[in-house]
Image 1 (cartoon, rainbow, N blue to C red):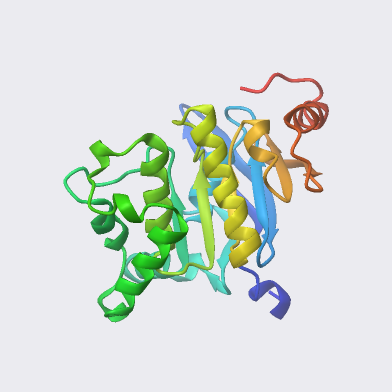
Image 2: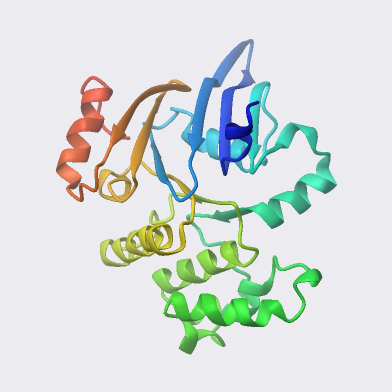
Length: 254
């Protein structure tokens, strides 16, 4: 790997992942490559079964790959044993899930603090305050998830993912459980994190009106890179949907 590649928040090189299904092998990922620049917002789109969720899990180090490599901030994830990988993931990766995955018995603030290592010391207090303020959740810090709306829960999940100042934020269908208004607010928030804080974000989605907030869209089909769409700041879901359908040869979004 070159020095320029090792400096990237994320570099996926020719990744292969296969699963045994009966007597045959399914190529969930078949030579996928992707590089994310500092301060870049990338969306990954594809129909059901295209490999987009498998790719995100590989980038997060949640599954082993059968070939190729995933490198985060210069570290090849395959070189880490389970314990070091868990610590590396905590310190360098922020992961946001569709279902929020908050602890129901904990307050919003306590949920945000969960991944923070003891080494952060009192720094964690200031970081939590800053995140709550930036996400507009200061007045909701003592509320438990059951007292928060879906959009508010996702904001807390994003704050939790950012507590360790990760090299990259991975978001798996972050608006999938939200209404259209809350979903748009989360997209605006992710966009602002890129524009204002130079965050690097990879987001998996199948929705053009969500993907349009990214700088570019990587389209997967049958576990391979099919095409890239440059959004050029376009906030027109119809244009993105048309471009996406053209890359798939007219297939319907699943």
